Length: 212
Ligand SMILES: [Zn+2]
Image (cartoon, rainbow, N blue to C red; front, side, top):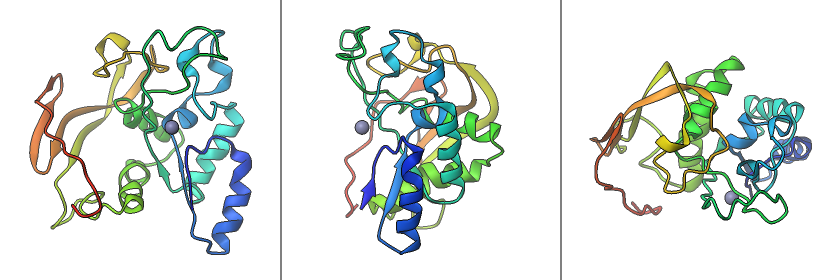
């Protein structure tokens, strides 16, 4: 059993109890639940609408405790793009989803370092554990025999999120104006540099399955 998009910390004791009984259960949470809070959502700001919803700061503290003690295994993007029109200012009808692919790593790293967690923790939550969960044996670690996929990160550099500079096709974001730590200076896919800061090569990705 895999619990996706864990938002509410109320589920943590149940999950911890199931894990203690060695029930086969894994759990993910997502960057928006771990870095944004209900208290900061402005009226009508449906960029923040997602499903399940972002909850209060105390709930977020409990989710980070769940990561620290292993109740939550991984952090996954839940990248959910939306056009500006679908994000109407009416919370009841607006599209529910947040695009996190480009900003997930710096958003999580910013919050992790504020909470005294290491970059090694972030790598475990965002790379090693998801690769293992998905059965992608060639991903998730720097080791002989695995794909040389790297994000080269300057952990101390900061940037302020400007929606106009996003590479997302739809530049709707709940992270606008946030100053985040962690700038990816280059990206490597199977040993080849495919992106330098500011310059993206032609996409060379391919669909992955458990066999390759
Ligand atoms: Zn989703």
